[in-house]
Amino acid sequence: MIRFIEVTQDDIKNGLQCDSDKCAIAIALKREYKTNDVEVSILNDYASLCVGKDELNIRHENKVLDFIYCYDNMDDMDMPSPKPFTLEVVEQVGSWDL
Image 1 (cartoon, rainbow, N blue to C red):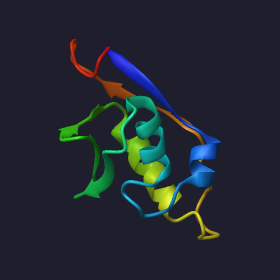
Image 2: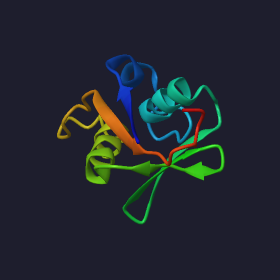
Image 3: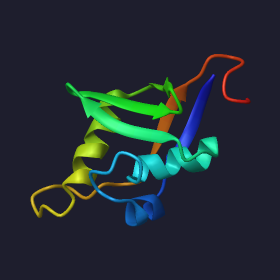
């Protein structure tokens, strides 16, 4: 099953750049999974999105990496502004209170 999570313009506006649990993606994850226990990070050019102790299996990782890079650098005039997008998470049947 694929869960579609909207990262909205409000998330972009209200999030904090370079903050693993307060950035735009973290806000969207908190809203979707109804928990504050989230973490968004980049490790060795790999996007890591965690809810609780579980790392999410995301589709289109390059899209996520591009968003994070644009978001964290949006004050740079040479960088494109981050745009709202739909995060796609592949879930196993029976996980997360489907």
